[in-house]
Length: 343
Image: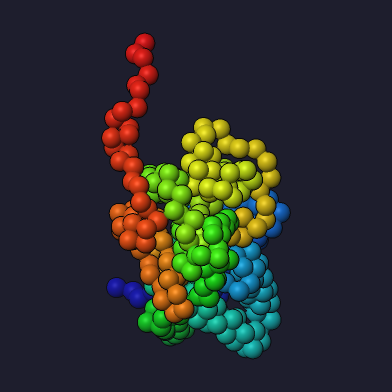
């Protein structure tokens, strides 16, 4: 039996092959992030099909587009360093590539750790970048002939992920007043009670609550601020229509029901203030870890706040405050509605 030996020529050939693969993977990652950056900055779209990318971008100081641009610049820089390191036998070039990749692994581990455990979101674009970094680390270890480099990279990434998984880092929460798209003072001189209602245009319980408030003029005993959790463009147009409605000042709940029942989406521009308010509402909701609507935040006095979730608990609270003196039975109302004639 003969033992196969690896000649210097074959060893260099294999190193050349893996070096080309390494450059190709870095190039694909850089090109992909460059396309994503162009789409976000100029086309207003994204390669990521999930809303998690947008959610994660809200908690990054430089924004989602800034994070993508930074990632693209990083991969192009690493590609250039590896390109020259393969042509010029300078140890500091390979050392620079190793430092850049290890630093990126620490950053990516920290970002994904906060994303998975802190926000409870899974951004597909961030996952793709993390997998690309892992593949680059493995190929770099193969080219350098040091598997210790691979274990070092895994340790750095795991440390960053674990640190941000165990720490509780709460993002800045906007003031509740900044989440409101509509305010109604009622009889402000006699209204020490401030009520902030979070609702959705697609929530049946919210509609029933609005209907009960619409037929009770006693809602004017409180100072109301209204926030909507909807962010779709058609919903923003409906919110703008509610704000423009002439009855919004005298009874905002009637305006909500009227616009909500319209089949066609109202026309007209959406004020920037409404877009900011709905965005801050979503941030406020995630900060409080609230999952559903309606939610009523009641400020009864200095330092005394009550949070109520669900239609029934809100109605019972409003009844105790003599705001909901008359209640509509929506089930009986639907049963008594005239049915359309059969064809």
